[in-house]
Length: 184
Image 1 (cartoon, one colour):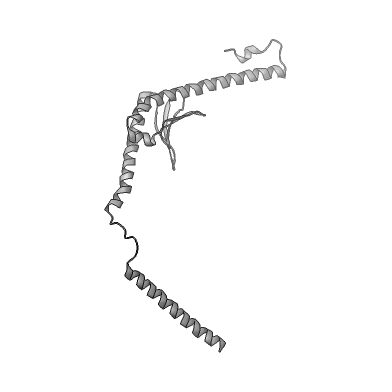
Image 2 (tube, helix red, strand yellow):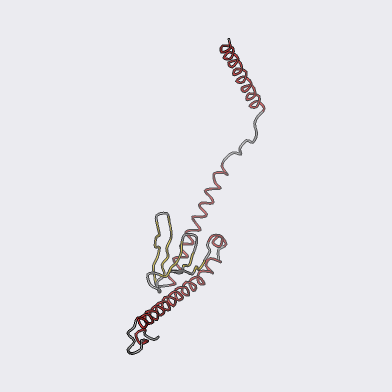
């Protein structure tokens, strides 16, 4: 790579020469940043390829685990809706983070891909158990309850009708008394 300082022509002390030098330095910086981002994305892609058979081996895991590589700054490998892997703090370190209402929590930070695969596999297993527990908690109470009675008995309907009729008749009687006092 050509150094930006070596691109200045001898005797070129003008603002144009300084701008050219600054543009070349900026271009070199952006090239380096893009190379780092590409390297991070490639490392995350390899991690995703290693995790794909782990997720595919369990049908329950495939229903809520979606390994999605999202390019960006920084690129992220999403494991589920709240857990992702980023390359941080340097382009060679994997960081497993989980978002929660309390903020972002780092679950593991390592440069060893095999260690990261093992930790993500454990995370998926724990999420599967928690999901099974939620499903059984929702279905268990409904299994122990008696079926609800649908409709009303004839006696309840007759009592409701008589109550309404009595209250209506009483209201009309009171209204009649009030009107007769006001007019008379």
